[in-house]
Image (cartoon, rainbow, N blue to C red; front, side, top):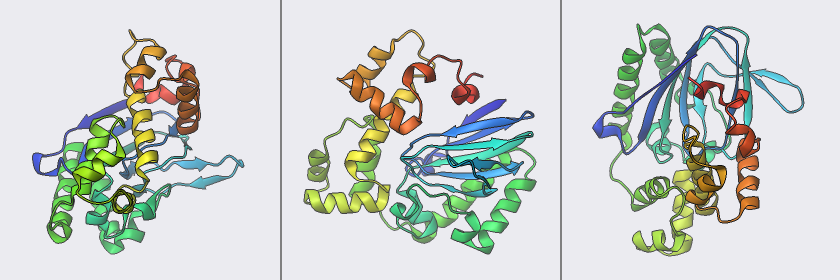
Length: 265
């Protein structure tokens, strides 16, 4: 299995967190976890099935948005595959697709539902691209074109969303509202529209994601990792981790779980 990440161009860093690819010639089961950043996904080789808790199996899209989410999902493919992904900052959704970010919270809409014929055309370009560098160029051109149509100015709430991510969920909501020079209630309404979640839930998921980012930091104990992330109570740490990942932290960080197979490269 091969996992790679690519940095966005300088002009896109406010809206694109990263580009990434995941490819393998083997069957694979993927466990999706809570994340505040929606992802634009293209399955340019193979198609996954989503496995529901009820036992139902349903075909996943081949191109679409995995919206910012607080829930876990499980996907499986019985053959080799290739995925090209774009990790977006949540405020990019209204500017790229003309809808409030909270409309896709916990959802996975097909790209052709959001973009119609333009979505089908973009999927075809990604599928027939010669390599991942060309795929990155195609998506960067698409994003730049969309931003030129919709992007007029940066709202203060955009920087507040990024501040929570940069500060690993340890920023006070009241202070952020003050920084935007609006009331706390107004701030929360704007924040929900452009991030998809309330500031409190958004911060909790960001803090959880900051823990996941320590996976390769094997010299630190789980207790130290939890403290660094702002958890001062072990039971609270375990509760949040289980809620947002579906797994216990000790199992996730063991290095022997199927959940982290893609990271063990």
